[in-house]
Length: 612
Image 1 (cartoon, rainbow, N blue to C red):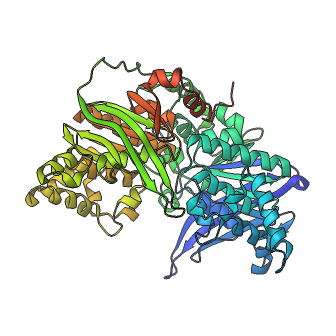
Image 2 (image 1 turned 90 degrees about the horizontal axis):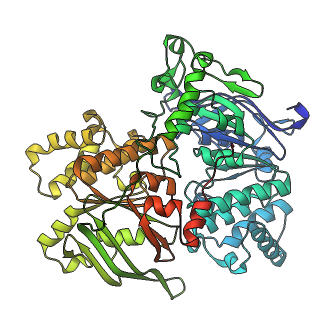
Image 3 (image 1 turned 180 degrees about the horizontal axis):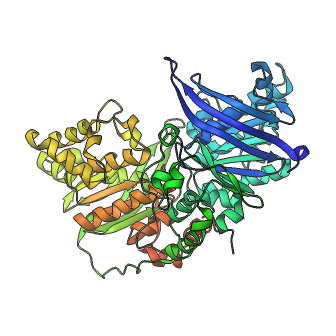
């Protein structure tokens, strides 16, 4: 890429934290990247790799205690020493950002149209008296991102679905017609069909405008389907940079290979998911060595005696692996052999010993904003047997989570029956104390976001002991039981003294699972338990669910929008659409030969391989 072709050129970008006592901590070290007009580049890596802070450094929107140095050249103009006023003029019109959670971008007190109008007013210098023109233009901008209903302009963010909120946020980000859009995990929190719609929308808008796009994601399937080139970031450094198709065909760094192998297949069930053990270290922990060495199966002394440079491995490809020539053949063999190791399809027996049965369950919420009613569940019937894993899939708004909450008593159904091990648990308030205890010990739940479900002020030991004490476990044996629970979920006993903030996302989810196991439940409701996790951590947690089921005979009701995940952990699956079950059967039969058009649509929305 010649200098004239570059829309953005970043050289030696370093980001560091500076404490109040003068201490410093490296976050990103020496990032180089280039972006041309109309090109899409991806920055991929696990949480903690420095992806988001790199993006914020480019637009100079770092937190007060985080600082950047290096060269950032936009259209030939150096931004690292630009004034605050100059940067304010560039943000939005030159470089704009779209964040993962649209609630972060959208003011909950402003109607959707107002967000776009404010950005348009900044672009045109509009004054009072032009409200009608601004509103008409806001409607046109919403139409550009696929929203043709003008009433959306009048709605608040909380009145919109996740996909609609992301479209409004995108319209606001594009309002000043930027040359570059930085999209930070724009589809991670969305269900598979909405994700596909948002990604198609991004590409369509980009192509129509000739805009440069930087996509930040931990999902390689998404990156391969959207990006022209990909930078693989790990512990603050780029370990590989390559054209997207070349990287998908053959990764040239063990970390990139590990990410690829961690992806669950949609077309088959693995014997065991391949996971990168451990978690991303801080850059300070891997000074003077290959940053991936502590987790790499091929690490040798040469990998620990200096940080390998990012070098040309092939034309247009760079790798930071010093042993690439030695291990390339073995890496290629793993790429071929491991993904083909399948698991025999699960054949369900004709009858099951029912543990939970939900009959004709209906749930109606009153819409407080408009006075109407929302029918979340419209007569759902499902069954989960003992030592059976059952999946519940569908888009956001299909009623999956509502059904799970009704099962564990967090919501009360409007009508219908919830039978838990022979007890009618439709209304826990009507049960005797002994019956409530029995139901709660039979069914427990693991939530999507472990950080939200754990008290940030409680240590791991306190969180587990609280559950033990509430359920009458002897206090003098609590410490031993805490150690046992941590061992069950693969955490050292020393983690008992840590608080959630000191744990990685995967470690927090393991603690949440340990807390669920504290009462020895028979059924665990798993509500999107891996959707917020990186792909390698996701593989670790899914393997954990499998091993716990094998060891304790657990049953699962596994709620997810990710069909590749569902295939790995369930025997049967129910497909939900608008509060109703539209298809049910063995997971392999449903995913291989869907009978309902909605199921087929879900499967078709999954990002596919771009390599023949």
